[in-house]
Length: 461
Image 1 (cartoon, one colour):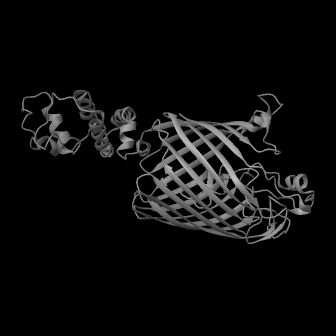
Image 2: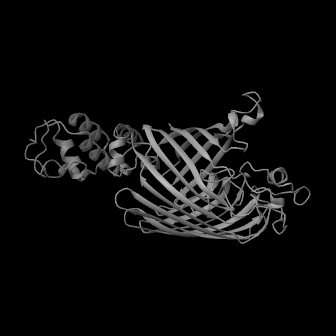
Image 3: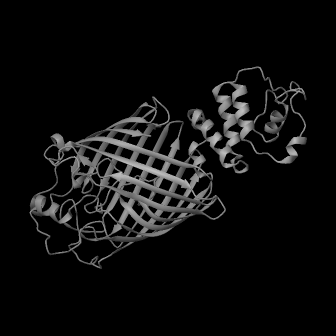
């Protein structure tokens, strides 16, 4: 194995002319050896170190872990390689992807190199059930497929295009080719690096914007978010600022929902009660510390595209929101996430139809283990607590597994487990319990007080 890896790395390394005159660091590699020049160059570049810093031991078979170390060091010199040489290093990185992940080297770093075009995707088959809700029988099952293509335009510019299907419900009586099965572009964006790995400008449509960022719980976010975003990040902290508009309503027909569930007709009260059309200017500051732990604080200022945000009957009306999160890793396998949000809002709740004012949210989640799609048989188990006042949910999408029926106006517990059956194939199951609703809502209709069960298969390719 050593000869194979060495030959590939020697073919891909572009080292400076001075390397040819570097001293031979290994006493067991004679100057007349066919591998002498490659060994010296790779040693001078830091790709190989030998045994005890003195012996190359060219006849010894090496482990996959040692080979992955060599590939990882070659990746650090990608800026000196041609497009063709990078392609060869990419192949080696794919071969040793699992070992590189264990070394803490993200193979996805290769996507940042010039000349690399990468296609990825994922698929989800999901089951959701709540007794007495719309999620029963065939309507409990749905699926989604997403495709992504990323191209490195030059050293500083990356273009990404993504396609997705809507969540397709197995309970639909329409034809499989019907209009409800639309596929559309949910990502069309350009990322520009200012010559430093710390600064990045991203412009265009992204598939989602998390209020609080991807390290927070993700209680609410907007799908298909058109924005311009500037970010500075180093090993210690990150600062993000941007402005954009939400383009999806999370699948919620707000006025019809309230009419059907609470016998309160919002028709004519507002022409735009959904989440789509809301604009936001936002900022976030995050600090990173030992063991990949982090804290962050974020702020959003909202306005509506149609100017109706002061209408008391607009359910998703909010002037601004601020929040904070702490993600604390302790021990080798434990993580505690705590997330708080306060919303400056007056209007009606999506959940109950009640008039609400300045709702708050608390969420805590404790996780043991880590299910990694790249590591078969990895797993985690978690328990969470949510305390959401009436109106805390803005009505868009959510990263929570509670994305219907139990989003606000409640205190509730949940538990779940994730297990990676095989590489890029994960199974997850979640269950709510001890749910307590705070208010019965308009005309005493209240919420469905049954617990939620969810299970899903996720595939990556």
